[in-house]
Length: 485
Image (cartoon, rainbow, N blue to C red; front, side):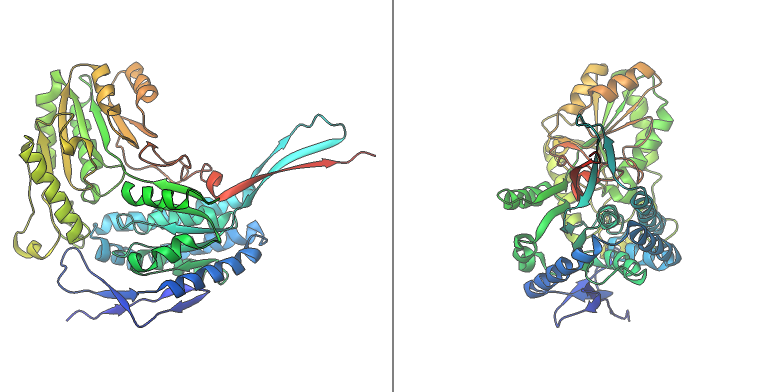
């Protein structure tokens, strides 16, 4: 029998629980929960904001060097606990242990990067037309920020959001996804154990429908950073529209990879499969559309299908697994419905298709890695985000048609081009309407110091990562000092 672990939430520097609980299931076998977290209510949410408001007054005045020390200490603890953390990421999300270990390591990298940035300071020395006057800008924290993270990257997304805002001196109330709360609680515990003052970070685990009003309507919120679906992001944006609250949204994507006739086709096939089927396609930057020039369409498609058919479907704990389960029954069923609709609209399955229910996989959330052909620009699966192991392929005639196909989307997160032509590569970088452009590499894999975010329906104007994220989590103050008589 699997013992049910109880993991408490963090509020005001204390680990807290109530009498109500949310069960956490392993998507490789959803029959029995393996952990539970508190189902906090609106009162606990308001209390978390109370703690954050009080803590902010001291934290914003804390030396940046002390903030950096705490973040560096938390990074060290995550690396020391990497095996334990990765096991929980795999258990609650389903991704392979290799992917989970990479996620934990990258979470520590975010802490280290922003610890270093905190030491540097943020500001600019400006010339002043007035005599005997020196003017500079300085960046200051904006206050209490609500962080809402998704289930697909349950550790790295909180790290991407929390590390910079804490380094800059903000306080936070953090709501992890209900399907994957343990990963975010690991991140919070590392910060707590590294000496983060009480109340600077508060983690609220609860059922969204019961606590949404308390989370979003608190008057002390200075900013909201959210990663998730467009539907939820649009709802949050509308809810904040008449308030002086910043909103940072990292939303959907329908990312395309273009394979030109001069590309290294085997290398392109390997890169596209890595970008499409890593984490079972459950990444916002995953390639879900492939646009291939006609002269190489048949050869590339053959290589692509062969590469996909080398993938091994199984639980994330099996070292042989290269394609993990989807993260929940709801997500599995959504992807299967999208596949059924695509076939009904005329798409042809080149490989895969349908659920994988062989043996023990019958108890999990498995979908076969799928490649679809004969899709048109009007096919729903070509235009709508699926967020699963599904890749659609189209043929085009020439570079201009390829770029037109990339841009024929409401989204604009990531795109890639595979070519040996430097001119074509730079033209693609200039003409593709996406926030992240890759040449001869995957649409995924953007490091901690690289600004990250999409255009159009893929996100808001505030980027994540690098120094760009400071535009969201800080405000600019201009200071003029007259030193003459």
